[in-house]
Length: 367
Image 1: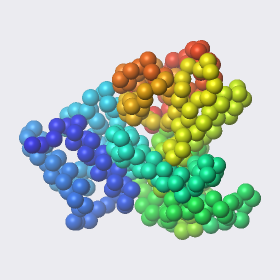
Image 2: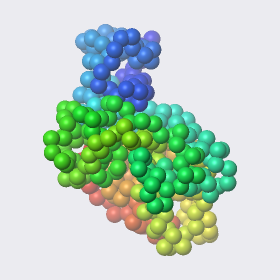
Image 3: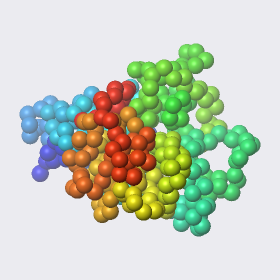
């Protein structure tokens, strides 16, 4: 039996995510990995059954993942799951999109998000006392890249580095062009210029023809040129996306709640998860998340059994469409509330903190 369009889209998301981790999505040689060959074969059968021209190979199929959105008749993914215009491969960076990583993480312990949880749980087991884990987790969140000279800077902890160094690896070749690694000036994650271009000046600036792993970062921000990427260690991608990327939001949330004397207890081995301590609060749990797709975020939190607040970046918290899609995807909308960091303390004490608007930011996907 051939898969239907949405099922095929899910399979492609898992394959694109895995291939992007291993070698980027730029070029492949025969023989293809088993999972990639399998999804190619299933796509061919899917096309034949529907009278469509099938792809001629994996490179063409990956090009489809770049150019054909979820709503394309080949996939016909319902808009209640992901944005209609969302693609699995970023059109400029030729890397898995954040939607792709989120979709491949849909399900308990699945995909990159599940890998991030497992890595953090293993780290917690190695660290022993809770304070050691929190120091190590904070290091990972704040240091998606580590340079050879960082160990000589003030505040460097050899003890922490000894616990986390196995979570870093050399910069893969597909993230460098002309011997240069670009680092986004906003999110601090790897970046690329469109068309595989090498920066022709001393600086590069984010814009419509650039890509960074954060995807939603604003235009007009100077990128950092790292000319010796061989002296850089890069945090593993699941942790870059699901721990480091939302870390600034998490620090903003924690600082705001500390000013309001709201006490939290961090969940061991999980990123951005806290139990709220004290009485008179509207929720028992707090989750700090930066997900592009609201329905996938809601599905990831569908197993909650106690009242919870989910904090997302302020811009998307104020999007009526994002909030509506998130709420529709929850099995019990009365149990989970979505808010941004600005009015969090008010919300916790029973007030209404969110004014809905429709912001427009580069790369932001809302339903």
